[in-house]
Length: 474
Image (cartoon, rainbow, N blue to C red):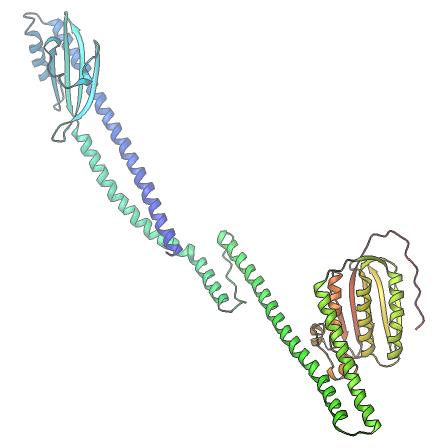
């Protein structure tokens, strides 16, 4: 059953029950009030008859046996109601009390009353009083027809039934309209959910206002945004994996093809020394590239599966050791390294961060012309904390390429990278190392002007004097 129908039916049931119960209580209260009024009137009439009878007995003379009958005849002709019947009986000869236990045992000058209905459904109020006059006990009974009260109740009940039907009918129309408008935001929300389920992840529900449905709509939109982001991440991850597999297969295929080809030439043909050297050199070069590729892939796998504790390291000592490791690389590419370091106590994993610096400097050397200049900087910033950066003044990177260069096997200039034994994994490795240190690489580059790669590092509470650092000769 639809929610709108549940709301509609529940509202009609509650309305009918509330109105019916309220009307029933009101009619019952009104009927009881009228009945109590009739009973009180009958009791008052009984008092009047008793008083009149006592007065008449005291004022008449003659035969004592005739006095009550004569008085009753006079009283019946007096102002007694047409709906009232009266009976006066000596206590010694009482007969109407048989089967009427409600009046037995009443005391002198007391009364008992009840409401009875006969076999025809006619209702009466019966009042009996007991009194003593001239050494004689009397019972005075008066019976009043109150059928009109019950008839009026039946009329009220019948009228209220019609009123209840009219109220339920009007309430049904109003609740149908209200339910339509109240559930319309939910219908829109359902339609939006169906569109999202069909693949339209950018669809959003219309804001439903400040009530609970509006809050639900905003929560739904927030959930849809998160789902869209997660879907995008999953799609991007799947794409990167596909690209990784394709690139890995390609990177393996090219050197293996060269190795197999030149090895087959050496095996199949009788070549002179120069040609044999050329073929062997190609095999050695491609073998080294495969070795570099396998080592970088191994590093990526290790970084994904291990936790590395961070140590407190003096920045001056760290950069001094890093520069010493970089000297062969700088000499190979004939580059000049300028180092500027502000002393600080850093939280880092020294061997991994040295690998990061080595890869960044290696990329800077490959992107710079001969006798170029590379800046290695460690500085403290009040907003960003301590930042390590490597800057070159070489070819630069196109802006559209920057978001992709940290992906494995992605190379801006593939022919140049392969000629320098590159596989496009260095920056992906650096990004993993940056994540281990709680940050990520920030890359700024201008085509033809150079590239700056920076990484924020965490500082530790100082517990010893920092060593001074002087730039080494390049």
